[in-house]
Length: 188
Image (cartoon, rainbow, N blue to C red; front, side):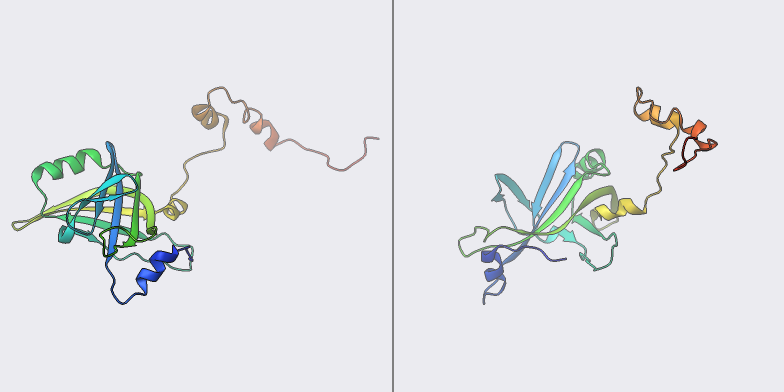
């Protein structure tokens, strides 16, 4: 899929010296969590992004020409029990998640506008805790994953009224199933 890339960012990607970075934004019940691949805080788009450094991990982002739902996994390692508790309480399935790819100039500011590398919806967090470390993993799925889900809706009057209580649009459908309709014939 082709994307428009800001001219300054494209120039930075082809320059002799490159300082790439990744911005991750994950929706939670209390608002978005914003992290970046560096150390310390980064101000971008009126928001403060927390530095994840080596503790922040992102799986490969796969993109194909086929109509296919691809996902990505975010991971945060070396986390405290308080952060694990917060993740389990705040992360909800179906909230937005995105990855932005950017470059930092010599002055410490982002060059141009970041390029969107992934956009999707969160799944449930998975916590892996062993004797040496604790890792929070979160999978996000592309919007195309909805095409693979079974639809449980039925086109019946009861189903329609459960969703829209005053709608009578399906009230007459059962009568239409056995009705004989003369189409395109004269009246006499």
